[in-house]
Image 1 (cartoon, rainbow, N blue to C red):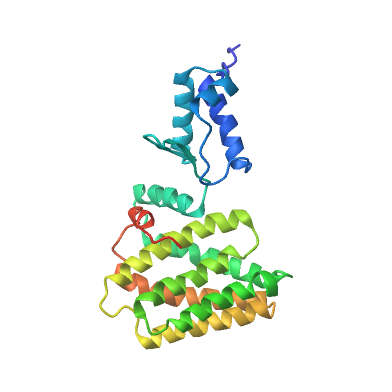
Image 2: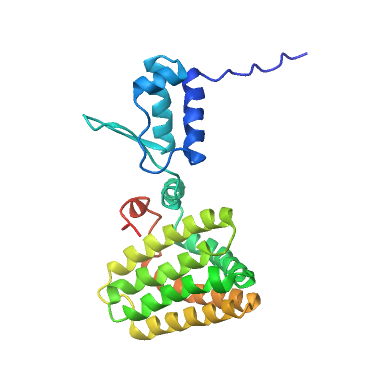
Length: 257
């Protein structure tokens, strides 16, 4: 009879890191907070300085803290975010030589689901419609500024996903939205005349139609409109940037929203 595999006991540093991780993820420690001083943590956990330093390093690798040096130093708390998730996913995709066509192909299947979910929400007039309308208003107000049109149009799509009402989908599909947005912005920023007036107006009309379908609670129509609109947007962007691969640095360099 084969011997049962040995269960590895967690190291002291892992136990400390787990306790601090729970404090961050539960909200007891918030974004921008500084972890207690090393002296306080020594007292709280009763561990050696090397074990505490290793615990902090584990949290750094998780992306939950960053260590500042000097007199004003300390371990600063960072909450998990869609942007950090998108950056990690984009690094994995880049390592697998995935292309923007792969990402947009995934969104062609996934984003229309979010549009249908938005239309199906009973509270859509309070929790969906005003947010999408605000993005359309921004597009219209800055329509003459071609440089702003692509990022503004992408915000509509990101808002559509973020208001679908399902947190796992918001995180995962939202991460793909950020990756595609970063790629699309990089493609059109290289073009002297990125979006012709006719194409821009057609995209804006599509956004209005999608909003109307969602406001009416017509999930089937919202899905169909999203599918058609994404197909057109995909063709326009990939016609220019088809030969590129996913670049994780585009997420790192993206402007904060």
